[in-house]
Amino acid sequence: MAEYTTTIGLEIHAELKTNSKMFCGCKNDADEKRPNVNICPICMGHPGTLPVVNREAVRKVLQVGVAVGGVLADFTEFDRKNYFYPDIPKDYQISQYKYPLVSGGSLAGVALTRVHLEEDTARSSHEGGVDSLVDFNRAGVPLMELVTEPVMHSAEEAMAFGRELQILLQYLGVSEANMEKGEMRVEVNISVSKTDTFGTKVEVKNINSFRAAGRAIEYEYKRQTELLEKGEKIAQETRGFDENKGITFSQRSKEDSHDYRYFPDPDIPKFLLSEIPEFAVGEIKKTLPETPAQKRVRYTKDYCLKNGDIETFVNNPALAVFFEGATQGLNKDEVQVLANYITSDLAGLIKNATVSEDAVLTTVGVQHMTTLIHMISQNTVSSRGAKDVLKVMSEQGGDPQQIATDKGLVQKNDPEEIKKVIQAIVVEHADRVLEYKNGKDSLLQFFVGQGMKAMKGAGNPEMIQEILLDLLKN
Ligand code: ADP
Ligand code: ZN
Ligand code: MG
Image (cartoon, rainbow, N blue to C red):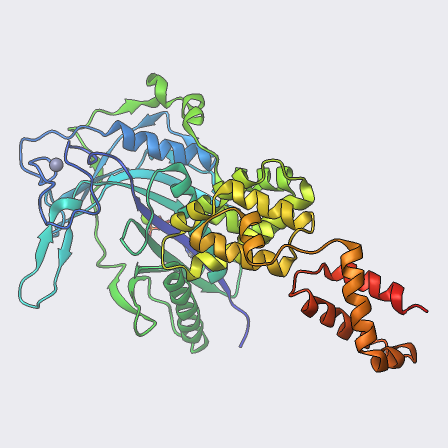
């Protein structure tokens, strides 16, 4: 089968983390379990009510815009997107059409089309069969929509983009962006083609995880190429993704898709961002925390870490804070050792712990972590011993020096003491010493092992080897 190119564009929605809803004073609370408590005439769409734009929501979208290097709108307005559905009490959704807050920009090498602001819909549930229930707590929650250009070409690339956007939103404090909770929702547009021209695109909805996005893309690639190979046409349509079956299914064709009849919402004043000083690019910039991209640069420059370690820290801010704290007073080499112990050993202990990551990190303590690294670099503990000490530190806390002493893990570095032990071993294994001297070099490790055993694992293995070589020379 000839090679087809896949083209992918994403449309991603994220619920913004604001105190109140987009156009009213109702609480914006994704964790509210009781249905229909955070509602008022405005978000219920009663006639005669007047929406008021949530300044914080606008600021958050502008923060995203600056972080991705997009152009902030000067003139902006809100539009009505008209359609009828039980989850949209006004029979229109307030969104942005012609004048989005942000245009262009890029993230993870992917060109962006726009980022705009709208309101979320209510949540309908059809469980139980006969009746459909609607919960309006979510109606009117500020929702950011980000649209990418059709420039991605693989499931991996699309998933990586989604993850990068997710951590960016979390860094900026703009959204929790938890996909399981529906705080971030991904729609995938995909087409395949053998030529440079775009193929017919299919939009896939109901995707609950990045993994699902990847699976939907793989499935669509296969389905679309197979159709084309049979000489059939791809229908431009919206499809859903069935998580359990791992397949997409037709939901509606483009022909009967909605004509939304967008028009500017007459109840909301249009505004010029240039007339609002706090929304100037410079002002927004001042409010931005470090972004994941900036953190990568800083970690490369300041700590010279390997990319894998950097990614672990970029994806886990709590671990990164712990790492940075523990670098105090360590030299470059020790910092690398610290990164290794945190990203492999400590991360493993956290994974298997019965308590939270935060709890483990607090129990270990930043300063004790630094002390442990000093002990390793000064050969006070072997790397093997350090792992045991760290385990105790993560479970019970405490000073690593004390733990190492209690567990007999303080490494013996006294050459005279080691020499005595080695001499005894050499006497005890006179026959093997002879074999060694007759050319059986591999026995050296046996002697080192015997030395470690005699010192209950607390001997410095390099020193033992050095002394052995010296003793066995003649
Ligand atoms: P529509 O008008 O149908 O909503 P848009 O042009 O607004 O289409 O694009 C919506 C999304 O579809 C964007 O993410 C865009 O990148 C993506 N897209 C557009 N054309 C294609 C294509 N041929 N293949 C894959 N994705 C596409
Ligand atoms: Zn309300
Ligand atoms: Mg569109």
